[in-house]
Image 1 (cartoon, rainbow, N blue to C red):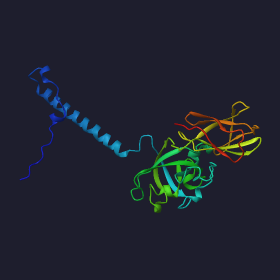
Image 2 (tube, rainbow, N blue to C red):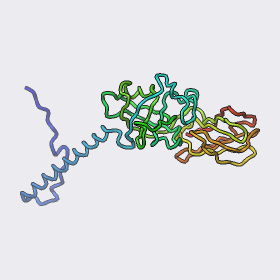
Image 3 (cartoon, helix red, strand yellow):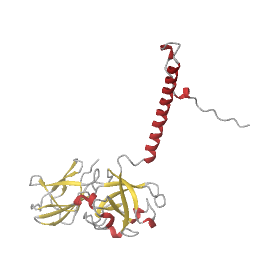
Length: 279
């Protein structure tokens, strides 16, 4: 004979009020009201528990934004090199294949270059894979189809796309959020151009990752604000040949890192120098 498990009683879940504080003889309607209150309290407890389970099951409702993702660049991501951020060879710059081209709504005219995003595939059990990826914005996905404004869209390097979705999916719904960028080594400054036209590419930026302002100082000059030429290439028209160079980098969260005398007075165009880093 099977013994049915004993279910918890109402009183084991909800402690009734101390009736010694009330008259011992109560009107039948009063007893009914007390029992009704106990039942309503139990329903409230169960409802709160249910809602908390739903919230945790959803998982991506708080702080996450809905978008879509596709992929490009081939199996080795060679087609992702270069790009609208000006990073050039993404392997040598340290970004690898964990990169994305952003739609107009996310690209912010290039100011989002270097920002990091955590992405998960959602609401498509047929094609989604478990887990999440973290990618760096390195390119622009021009308007046309899914990248049209105001769509939030990530065109991912193919190798990283395959970490969250199957190849045959082509396009999947995703949820994303901004996350801090973790970089090895210092911020890198690559000095291009020529005298009176110093074009500095800023890469490997930690923290917020997206650079909103750059300042330069020669050993014989004061601090000067650089103008953004394109992507993360920043320009100064001051003659700085033969001077050691310092840089100040400010990201979108308002934090700054100053790198003093990063480039020695003997620097030349085409060289890259490493400075401080966001922690």
